[in-house]
Length: 174
Image 1 (cartoon, helix red, strand yellow):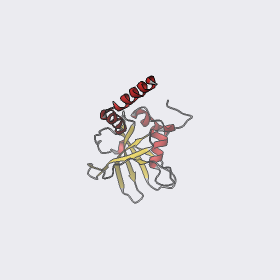
Image 2 (cartoon, helix red, strand yellow):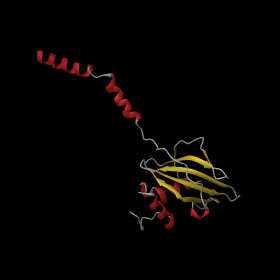
Image 3 (cartoon, one colour):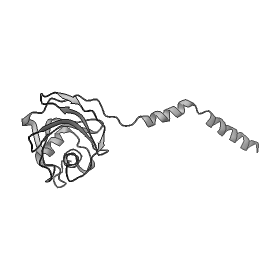
Image 4 (cartoon, helix red, strand yellow):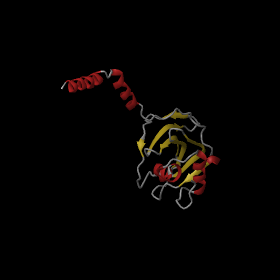
């Protein structure tokens, strides 16, 4: 009986000896979520460096990526300049990122006609969805930046995929 009481006292002493700092360490671990790294805005796109890609038959827009802007970060984000030319003659330029691990995208900045950038008001990460229209991000995810859900190892691999017209399991780069 004395042994049980002594054992119970040790267990109580152990748990009561946990300090607030032990609880904070666990909270710190939870707070250390994935974070995107700092970024620099790229140079404005140049016509000769744009690679066109098809985003489906339901869009009359033309979609391009500025190949010189491609960056693959250590945090697992592919960053790029997206250029969209509408059938009405309007050009939209944006600096964006795709995170392969979570199938999300983010707009960092929007391009102005004079070649400068303005940071996006809503730069939250949003889920990439496969839809019949506005498929450009799904196509970039599936065909160029995250084939089979795996991030390309570097920007040169993404550039090669653009030159080949996208990923094909029959013509793998890996």
